[in-house]
Image 1 (cartoon, rainbow, N blue to C red):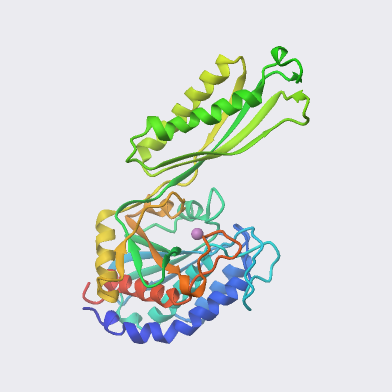
Image 2: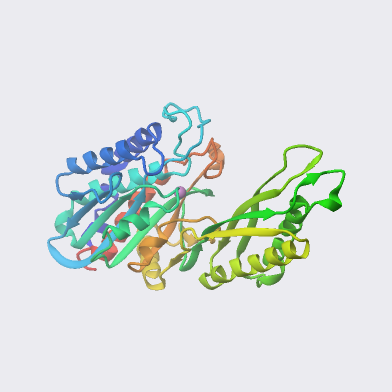
Length: 396
Ligand code: NI
């Protein structure tokens, strides 16, 4: 076992309070996607105070810190996202958001604080490092097209051999980390549909082409994709989430506007879904004399974890936590732009359980009362230090 791992308890202990303090500061000062100027500056200044990092700002609101070990070895990139959401916080704790309508409701404040803690701990034992660790503090995970792809385009993955990221996960009771090889998170695509009929007086429906009645058929038939076109063992979501039409009780409108989301874990299925959708839309609108405009917008790719890297990360986590704590993650239909890094280097994304029923930490991600159990923060530090020790430790 590497020296880095033997020192682990002391290293985590040394930064634990800082991590909680940083997380609370960030929670109080949330910034929306692509606007993380103060957050990035805070991260930059904190990293500067560790004195050993080579820092860069690939985009206006992101920060990358590099630490080179004394001996050659692999280059490991670790990623934290930093952005908040347009939500009015309803928590009343003392470090609740000070900014109306903006809130860290997904735990990205915790991700940033954890990675800062890892960077601080690593700075104190850099002589043991073989290879390089790159810390990617990423902007704009929550807003498509996302910060990850921008950072990949800016070259942050050049020379990186492995990439690892994590998400605090309030859906699971604190005290475990959840790992999974293969598909973990969905590709979150969006679609926009306009159905064009012929408006008129509601008392004379025969003289119109009613886009509401036709749209209702479309919504119903789109359900057949998940229930009848796709193997029941293949995860998929096709949801219509908006349906806007009409202005009055006695007018049949000219158009109906619909939009929604499609989520898939399989890249092959993802290719197929818009074709099925358009066939259904075309068939129904034509059958009733309407026309349509259909736009399908591809979101982030699915998070598909590399088998080998995941196995190594799982082993590293078992070494620092024990078998009990390291469990198999259940895939989720949520999306994550971490997938952009995985196109540039093999990598894995895992979950750090952060919910706690006993403390009332039960609200889902993106809820106005979302929070994380801060006991998960030192677990995150421990996890990442264990992973660094395994990939870039002295005996690795
Ligand atoms: Ni998130």
